[in-house]
Image (cartoon, rainbow, N blue to C red; front, side, top):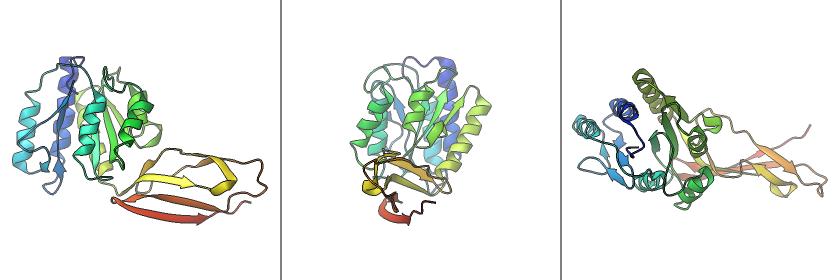
Length: 239
């Protein structure tokens, strides 16, 4: 985020976090960097490319030249980031304060507009500064209870955040995960599709229908595994 509301101290922190992320990538990884303000601008000769030493050096150099200016259009930046990735694959890491001034401004509105694109990648965020909008960023990111958001206020925290998120992004994952309990339940949470990292539990809460005497007997879970659809069913036993 290089919008005008980003002061020099926070811009320096954001650069440090982005540079630390780039330094953790492997040559077989592919990376794109967007400078987001009124409209997003891709950095480097190619919008998306292999994280070779030459490309990483190029991107780090261009990051150092970024200055703050323009409105904060988080919606446009994230839409462009999703367009650069294969459907349902990859990871988007936002770095900024999460305070858009144009485009979608509310968490639900932002997520709804992203969902119109179809299967989404995983989302994480580095929240820059003590006044970062953790509510919006937490709702945007896939991990529940804000676990997909890391707040930073100094350079050492920026380096630790980069290592943490790269490790998270490297985990196997399921995306677009949906759950169903059949006609015996009329409200099931999570309602919207979610993403899960390897080993992460999926908590499900449901309200059973009063006009049904029986409890659900089967849980159906569907989604994408490495961008490919899957469906699995788990029998339920009520004790």
